[in-house]
Image (cartoon, rainbow, N blue to C red; front, top):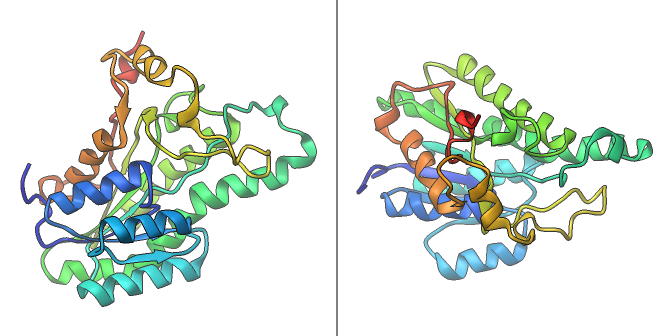
Length: 266
């Protein structure tokens, strides 16, 4: 691949680590100019040091204010915005309904859906005027939301995580219908991923746990899928590149599944 995203201006929400950071790198390699919204100040500092050409906004993607600020910074730096990517997410470490203290359900639900769903709504809403302007220049704007294998198969997370990712799947469908023909909206549904900083719910006392620290994770990921591969954020990033490019100009409301073929597993 070379220059698939030449001239594109992108904002990656949650671009400080894991899949989001891999998307930043892949987009840059393919010719895009990329900005980032990231909550973690240490990750922001690392991005600025490694990629000084990337405008970085430090803020909480679950808020309107942070998304508005990041979109404004992108437009100021690049003169517009063509592609919005949201990679924000939080995990529940496979907690089933009976694993949840009834007294914590309200708070845990709010934290999960605020992070995994509301952040997507805020980022799309903030970016929408700029993305719609793309159509007047001959090409629709692009929104890419991060779903998950969990949006299609039970057991790939707990009840809160799985239901939140089904909600993101619904956002892709609803927004693709609502925003056409001005904006294309698609999803990427990664399978289990190596080298991420995906953490658990603070409400459940899981925020210090990283999914990537699970013992034997690489072998476990490879063993669960037909292709017997353990994929990294970099592997997933190329699906985002394709959907952001003109090669996918006829696709909206769709999803790419970089998951090792779990859907054909018997």
